[in-house]
Image (cartoon, rainbow, N blue to C red):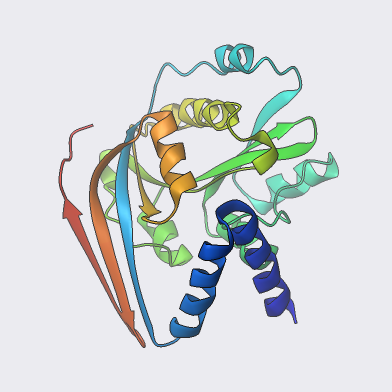
Length: 232
């Protein structure tokens, strides 16, 4: 029952954001996926801005009650929820069954959440170690963690706040935090059909440096990265 409810919520989200055609395509793929799956991802590279200024971002947004919260554990999230800042239970594209966010925090991922008042407006995640990336069983994108790199994932903006610059505000706060950690580069992979995700990458100045092709036949998985341009 929980699984069916999650699928229903996901279906409504696809219909609302991408239309009926994408919903039909997703439904067909859902029937095929148990046996065979093939995907293409665009690879992006982003240089962390060490001069990020959240106060300037706030002025550009012209919003008074806006804030970004850095969440590194479920204990942090519990504290936020005690103050009525909720995000773990929100049905975003990446929060399957409304449980993924709690699991990601348990496994070491860092969340950067933007709120307008107490309203959850945007989020992005950063993975800072190979151990966390492996634990999450996410895409096996190649990341030079020992070379001051990290893996960005899970970017999402609430539809009611899109095209207002809120994601840029989130990135500004994220960059300041990552600079303090010594991280200089973020790598990311966006599905080739994810037009919103690609648009977000372009908005913040990420550069596409190649693509990855993944394939699964029953239990066997294959991943290939084709690098076109490593410069940022």
